[in-house]
Image (cartoon, rainbow, N blue to C red; front, side):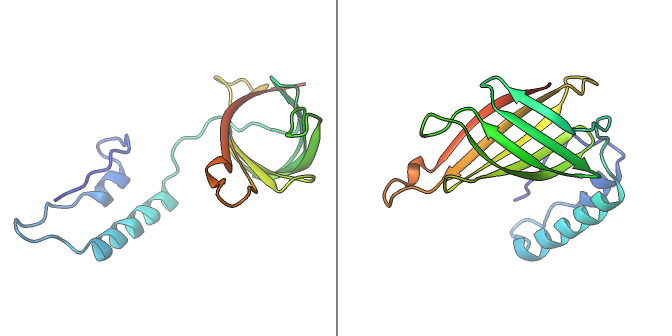
Length: 166
């Protein structure tokens, strides 16, 4: 059995060439561990050499506000970001804040916030844009929080935010 992963790669790309493999002989399955590991090593090697086109670099430094009124202040240094996040909404109904840290790559950003007053962490991933706009970030987030035994199903929440630079 052969498993193919479609990566949307150009026909003559080095990644596609590195992953090209003949189908196994009928009646003989390849060792998933050995061949999978070998293919992963090839892919990692090629990805180190070829970086897919990223969007134009954005300086994410500054103050950003989302549709709920939450505010984050970001300082960017190279590909790292740090700062503070003040949520306008929380479990107890008031504002709460936390430390923010993360990374950027071109117009992409990923950051996490550890909430000071709660046993909770929220992670966002997003992209500046649309287009070459650097005054907007479209994100998806997931938050995990400490819950009582038997309530684990309620420990992860997810959503989306749009941040606008102020």
